Image 1 (cartoon, rainbow, N blue to C red):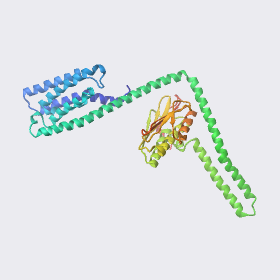
Image 2: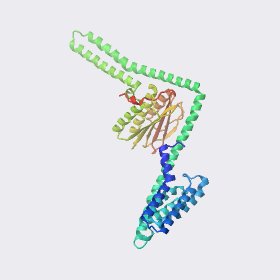
Image 3: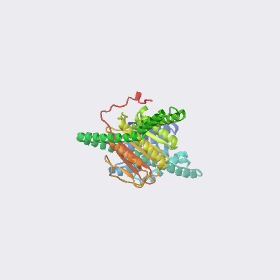
Amino acid sequence: MNQDPAQGRLSLLTNRYLPYLGLALSVVLATALGPRTADHLTLVLGLSVLTALWQWLMSVPFPVEERHRVKAVVFYFGLAPLIGSLVVLSPLFGFFAFTGYQQAGVLPRRLRPVGIVVIAALMATTQVGGVANLHGGLLVLYGGLVVVNVVVAGLIVQQALEDDQRGRQRSQHIDELAEANRRLRETMAENAGLHAQLVTQAREAGVLDERQRLAGEIHDTIAQGLTGIVTQLEAAERFDDDPERRARHRELARRLARESLAEARRSVQALRPGPLTEAHLPEAIGDLADRWSQTSGVPVRVEVTGSPVPLSPALEVVLFRVAQEGLANIAKHARASRAGLTLSYTHEVVMLDVLDDGLGFHCEPDNGFHGGSSTVPSSRPDSYGLTAMHQRLHQVGGTLEIESSPGEGTAISASVPHSRETMPYDHSSAHRR
């Protein structure tokens, strides 16, 4: 299972060695601060050795396998009397008794509360100063401490077990993703020629579509603006004897020139967004998220996983536009309290996930686009931006998946293929501002 080495070492220390450390500390304190009679020392050392042997021979690793269920129950309910005996000898064995909470995780769910109550009772005994103090008014205090220990320890143990389960599930998902990526690499290697041909055709179709779009924009804006400038200048020449009318036509020509310049700049920006001319994709998306969060008031978390690599301008533009459109949709429709952007680099693809915890919407399968499974909103008239995402990704051989349901937020996942031979970033010059 894929696990962070530092986290694995910490888990090993906590689950395997912490009980021994607690027992050793308790033995040192009990022998140094307790009665130094031969009988007391013999009982302390003898029970401690017996407890350590029971811990060593009977403990089972967590999570408990099905074949070790019975052994785990025998281990824990054999350990509890040993802890109780040590606590009776000296309340200083509370340092060891405390580890019983952590070891209650090996019990089946129905027996776990019993184990926690037993350890809570023993811990309360150490907190009132030992068995000798369990009389009179201290019994009320003892009962209150038992309740407090059960509640606090129960919550802590439950939270720790849930965190451990989530961590193992994440590791399992990572393993499954790694296996899926391995199979994907094998499949792509078997179909390398066909894949390359399909990607080339998709890119050529995208280039043709973009050329047609730019041709239409140039005809409708810049070309018409230049025609108007020429018309106004020619009109100004016809009124050499009328300075006022000549000046008016020149002013109109000047205004049309400014408008045409603005349209030209807008067309250039449409080809490659301004932030990508100043920084690589991870920095550009980070800056986009910062600006969006400031204007929308919604906190957004940006994460980059894997080793960032430079992509072709077409791929960077597509992913940047997906992030831009995704954040715009969150601001307009989601009513979210937080959002997230995750940019993931793998050996074969680059993935961008845009998440929010907002209103969500109904989705239904859509087979109108090629390149992967996808969903589109089933009842939203303003889904043009999502449709544009599909088209942009399709043009570069990418895929788009959308998961959403009312009240449970929305997750948009875009992925694009990149060349395996792409070299990693030079991080010393990654930011080009």
